[in-house]
Amino acid sequence: MNLEAAQLAILVLPGLAVGSFLNVCIHRLPRGQSLNSPPSRCPSCDDRLRWFDNIPVLSYVLLGGRCRTCRAGISIRYPLVELITMALFVIHGEVFGWSALLIPRLVFACAMVVLFAIDLEHQLLPNVITLPGIIVGLIASAVLPPGLVEAVIGVLIGGGVLWLIGEAYFRYSGHEGMGGGDVKMLAMIGAFLGWKLVLVTLVLSSIAGSLIGLAVIAFRKGGMKYALPYGTFLALGALVASLAGDAIVNWYVGLY
Ligand SMILES: [Zn+2]
Image (cartoon, rainbow, N blue to C red):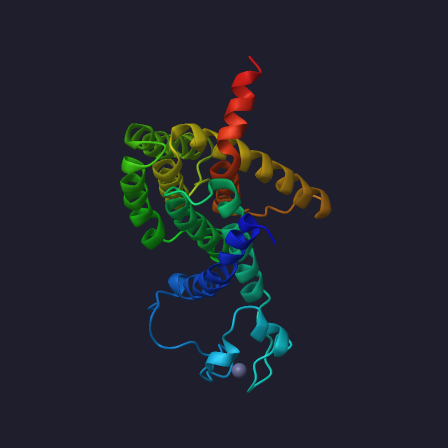
């Protein structure tokens, strides 16, 4: 194992531990529950989880995906979120190295994981994440890339573009197409990544949304109006933009 691999391995355990905390956020934030109390319980039998039943991924595997007491199935989401968060930590370490920028980008990635999961399940993007996210993103961008000016323009474009699309759609069709949560989420993305990567996020999430939307229509033989949570696609697009957006922008500019 070379030094670089050893450094990346350092990110595995914090990644799993943070992933475990993100599971708590994903479960409790949409239900308006406190994050630090009460201690974790089985949602089925209300039995309090012991520390050894709360070890990321490992406990799920050892328990066979079932509660020790009542044998109710535990959602596969728990180990998945832990593994995905761990993978994101390692990928961020690889992309950003041991730079100061690694910290805000990891915070950003964690927020995207939580918003992705909550929007998928509840069609909801909680203000308790997006609004402080805008502030934290602006503070980080004031001292680190992309810089405060890029970030402020990002907030304005991010919030403004989606608001305009939503307003136009509302006037044209008479019903709401995009929730205010999407607008605040894209403003947060702008605060962390700057306006260029907001545009990259919009393009990537539209492509992902169209492809998956077409697949859903094809497999459901149309006719069925299935609302796809847009925040889920925004989270995917923003993660790719954060990790590879500068390369994408440079490639695109190089075409002309
Ligand atoms: Zn139980």
